[in-house]
Image (cartoon, rainbow, N blue to C red; front, side, top):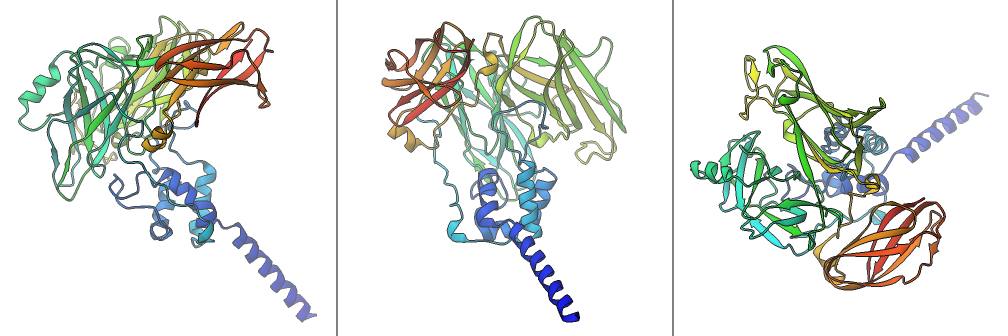
Length: 523
């Protein structure tokens, strides 16, 4: 009787151990693909991260640090909270990915079958978008000192344009990715940046939060690991004749002397028929009348700005901005019907991981809606980033110890179908892909239609494309004259849709090895 009981107990324990082992993720089957997609782009030689995460040995050596960082959502850096806007290039891990890494570390970090493990990713050298129309390079080399301090520096890059041009992409290429932390873009038509540069004996000029001029065009910026994308064919940003493109570069702390001379690849729309991205900012001028922007010492202070939208707009990007006292912020809109449109929430502000964010699809804000931007500041000793010890009264300013209440909105006047515009345009994975087949893009305009579907095709070369209309079941629908010759640049094609049943369709264009598609709703 005792022997039977013992055997049963052994069987039960053995079964439980086998079950646990079977549930433990392995590097080869589960973890490598998460690391390669979300961590390796920055954690590799020559990039900004302090150590590589490429091989099993490297990741397992830092396994407990990786687990802690992902559980606290410190890495990969992605400040916006879920449920407050859907953005292009979201680097945050899903709950399932975090659970997988946690179980793997807690389970002893088993390697699994290495023969079935995914291969480490390869990263293209040079431009990831092809041959640029213009290259803007820093005039002088900047030296990062070995004092382990952050540096924020503005550099002036004269465009020398003879006429205004429409920009479809700006690709930043760090000269030294190991120290370039992030970059913000501005366009100066006033000559202010040139003057400030001339007055500063070092390359560029110093500045923490404000370039010293009002940017003449709307651009966001660059962060490590981000994939630059083209605007859709019908959208672009203006670059003016004889303007200066100004970049603010944040150099990360370094314990060794480093040098950098970064450059920008600029790609222009070949057509002038482009909707111009516009920008406005909410700041202290949008505070309630009589309220001052002042943060007393030893206080956590909150401010709310508001602005009534005079006409219907489509918001395509957003960039909140504070300095070192920043605690949290959020932006939202309330419509005349009383609905709330959540735009962004950053529950744990970190000045060193600030950025601009592009919406996956433009967000429609009805006329008469009220925009709100709320931000709070921690001016106490509990804020480890507080530049003042002991804390002092802080007001608006561009200095390190000053503060800002600021949120940029990038927008377009609303047009029907804007909500379906896909801002996450396809990009090649390397320059070699371009040699095999030059890229092109397809956009329906408008995306809600009845009698006909109008398509904007932007191609880098003259080509022949085959058009297909595909229903939700994946069945291709034949349409008249499905083959079209399109020239280099932007061209328009109209195909009938009156005979299509109401519903959602995908229009697909095929040219050689390249495929581009867009979504359209037929009423």
